[in-house]
Length: 175
Image (cartoon, rainbow, N blue to C red):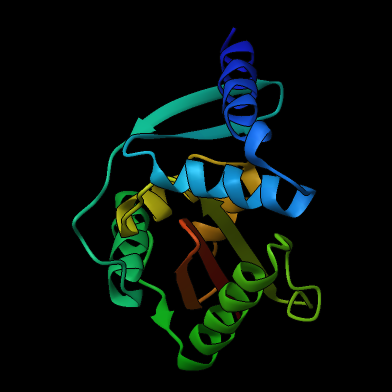
C-alpha cells in the first residue's frame, strides 16, 4: 500500500510537470525543482522487502562534522562502545566523496577507499535532515550501515553537503 502511495505521488508530480517540459533534461530539472519546493517531504527507507515512509520537516540546526560525530557517539554510547577518534584525513576524504557524489548525482561507494580495514556509509535525501537524523538513518538502515557505525574501527571521518535540494552524507571508518 505504501509503494502504491509513493507511485501515485510521483505520477502526479510528473504529470504536473510534463506539459511544460520540452526535453528530458527540462523534465528532470522540473521534477527536482518541484521536489525541492515542497515544505514537507517524505523519506523512503527500504530494508529488504519492507518499506517504511517517514514524514520529516525542516530542521533549523546546521549540519556540522562535529554534530554528526556527536550523534554517532551518542548511539555508540547507548551500546556501551567507546567514542571513535575524529580523523582529519578520513574527514577530508569523506567530504571530498560527498562533494563528488552530489555534483554528479552518482550515488555509489568509493571503491578506491574500500580496502582492507575500511568501511563507508553513504546516504542522500531530499528531506530536511540534521546530524541526528543522519546518524539514525545509518543506525536504522541495513546491517552493514549499523555494523559500520557500531564497529571496532577506532577512527572515523564524515562529509556532508547540501546541493540542489538534496543532502549527501558520508562516513568513513578505518583501523
